[in-house]
Image 1: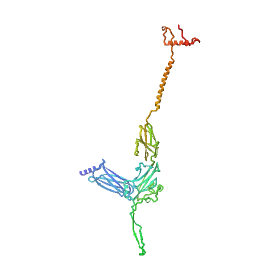
Image 2: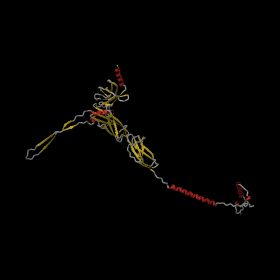
Image 3: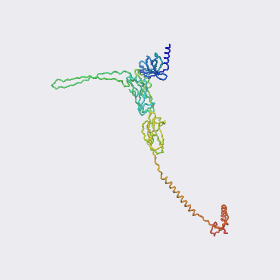
Length: 496
């Protein structure tokens, strides 16, 4: 009992804390091989030690199963589902992992749903200017390459088993031909600012290639006739026959009429005449050939006109005096919206095409005005960068800022000097005229008062002024003798 209990504890401790990670590389087309992977880890995400057993099985009919064991924590299982035995749909795979203690004891199990598809799996890719197209925005000024890529299992399936693969290309349900390299080149030059629909139908054939046949060449007969001299016998005729053989190797036909329909022609609108399955919603109208494997891929492209015809008013070179403001008026054509920015570098600059800006302005109409003041004189290059969804245009503009040496004008010197001279002259003449006038109008006053100084009465200025006024009025009213030559104002008083 002790041994049994100890074994039970060992088993319980070994079972606890395991996780299974089960994945696949599906979905895959019917007929391809799908690969499953199962790995076991502990709670810490690390691979445990010991020996494990992996039991695989699926729920397909007929079912598949496999058991592997060993000192590993991951197992792979590859299963092929032939087209003549399995139909498309959703299936389930299960893996059960056991760990060796005394015997293999189950520790964990996991299930996974996977898909068998009727069509090839992959996608349509677009490239332009040797770059992958982003957001399906393409330029109307360059050719676009469309190409089909398959998932790994489907590509391997076609490589091993397909004898002929052709791709039929349609633009807005108009047939544009078939290719055998899964690619198609087209220029959307007449579809600016429009959305176009691209469809591709891949048809893979598995018919065996006929063996080389040998046919006999036509029989070639060579006849030579020799005329003898008259003295000899009759002429002789020699006939030689050679047999030749020609070997002809049959190759898969690239003629699209031999693959799907004999009446499919360039420019056919398959939306009006259903010829191919899956294309332009013809899935239920035209049944696919069960002996072939199809792949249907579609995409919508937004055709945009690139930025072009960038015009800078005044040209691409400017000369400005230091202190003036540069005003650039820029216009361009293309599909909106636009992002623009500008950078200024000193000296001349060669555009590389990789120039970028940290800040952009969004506009819907390509009409720009760029004012700029340059603090220092010198040569500069203004890079105008305008982009939209499909292109980037960089336009360099040269700017030369020059500084003019300022010279004092003659009028600035002459006018002040002349004004000072005139002012001095006026002052001198004014002073002289004042002195001359003062001497001319000097009044001499005679004092005829011969009285003694002691007889004079002291008078203040006010009293004297009053006395002078009274004297003036009195003298004015005195009698004036006509015979007297002296005026009344010149008349003297009594000398008593």
